[in-house]
Image (cartoon, rainbow, N blue to C red):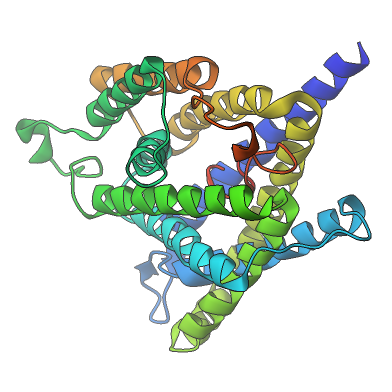
Length: 340
């Protein structure tokens, strides 16, 4: 009974945090704001959004490490690995957030749900991993679902709503997925060579991300964002809540993995994505056609089957990470059973 109560608490925490996280992300990136001349403008400050999120993630990871790490524990992972991994991690987040200027939030969620595809391709090509036949079936099902969601027939594409026609937004999602695959490959190397702990990975990658973003923002966006936030003070509050919900959601993911394993966590995070899509449709009017709902079902069936049947075929017992946990990387950071 106690375990059931814990599971419901952690799963409920993941659902609530990331449901509101999704609502705030869509509200921030797709809302209308006041310009200097009184006209309306869109939020275009992806660097600033991710910068604040990474700062909050770093503080959270530092707190977790302080309570979870052993006194004599030393992280042997090189700063070069963290720095390079932070670049691909950052690129994936920035591309994903930027895509929301052209695609609806449900399309972004479903597009990012195709993350197993680049992760598997990178694993096969560069890490020589082997996957069961069921994994390939899941990937095909996910690919079919995403294609049904983003495809728009030529007659519909001529209409005023072009959110789902393949264009800049979808291209950015593809870039984000490729960078997710790169991040996963580097993280696998960290775990195999250094047994990197999840909280170390989250802390160091976010710290490097803050450094890279600080350098990029020094070239102009920071002052523009401050001016924008002064005209629209509520956006800064929303961004802080967005970052806090992300960190709190990661905390529940961390507890779920530690107490019930990555399988239970995958089920919880996959389920919450489905309800996030439904909530977005209801709150923001992101209407889906029948074909797109069929695609949505295909995506989540593929993700569900992948969770249960698509595990990598282990070649060596030592290939797993030292703490047996999955990497903290986001996203659904990926959305995230990852945490950074």
